[in-house]
Length: 127
Image (cartoon, rainbow, N blue to C red):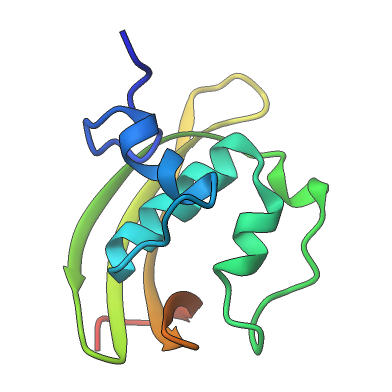
């Protein structure tokens, strides 16, 4: 049996985010990109995170940025546009002290950059 995708889509990893993280394909929607970025954090794929981040807002990422133990993802809502899109999600991670899980809630802005969706920044509210 194949491993389910880390993004919680219910699909096998090889037929979901695995296609993007391996470079076989690139996400054609902002939600697919956001899901693949979550899987990249889970699997420690730093090159993919850099490639999928808008160059104007991408921080100087290092392996230290991958220390969080992410465990599941829920897409709350998604609004796909032609040149910019917004995805609201909650991502759960295991607390380092073993006390359970905590959640990160974010409304993320994505834009088309050189004909590819890229993550730009978190928004303070749904636009």
